[in-house]
Amino acid sequence: TQLLEQSPQFLSIQEGENLTVYCNSSSVFSSLQWYRQEPGEGPVLLVTVVTGGEVKKLKRLTFQFGDARKDSSLHITAAQPGDTGLYLCAGALDGSARQLTFGSGTQLTVLP
Amino acid sequence: GAGVSQTPSNKVTEKGKYVELRCDPISGHTALYWYRQSLGQGPEFLIYFQGTGAADDSGLPNDRFFAVRPEGSVSTLKIQRTERGDSAVYLCASSLGGRGADTQYFGPGTRLTVL
Image 1 (cartoon, chains in turn green, red):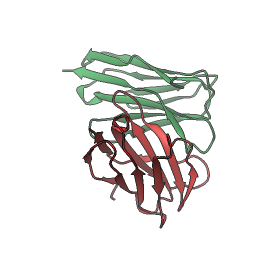
Image 2 (cartoon, helix red, strand yellow):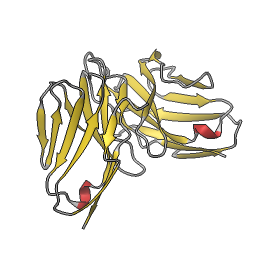
Image 3 (spheres, chains in turn green, orange):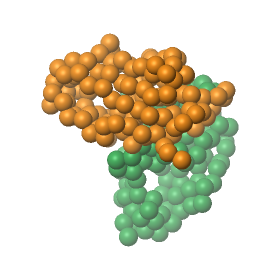
Image 4 (cartoon, helix red, strand yellow):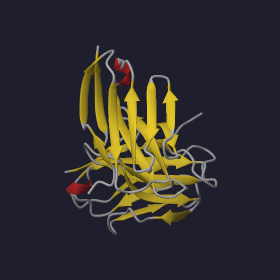
């Protein structure tokens, strides 16, 4: 059983469209991180959210941590082909964030 | 500066054989992590080192898996009597390892295929 459920599993959209990816759990996390992974490479950290209700923006990407710290979302505005990749959320159950629990990922393809 | 490096990038072996996977962390990082990523899944935590000692090995699936970090830098993940189900990408990450949460930087992984 996956502790963190991500949806959708696959997403294919046209350049310029907006999209939202979800990460849900029944567990409360001390912090939650979003990564992007490209083929043949390891995940690269995009953002860490630690406070319930927190919203962080990174250019066209907006990340939100749920009030109860059990869920998170990633919204991309005006997607570009360079946004293509596997988006992973990862939660830490304690403050040290040493042991991360990853979701199964959302494979995003942005078509030109 | 140099990131986390892992060797080999690909390893093909036969069922029952022994394999070693190597990880070179970022210089100065005291914490080192191993994860396993199966096809279509997110990484799964295996073990975490702080310095030379394994601070948390709760993710190792069974006693065929063992990892060492004898000098607090390079780490080797060892798998005995490999099984087809061990086929996956093995990712290594390192972090500064200080108090509180710190960012894990991942290497490119070693793709292990057990025939």
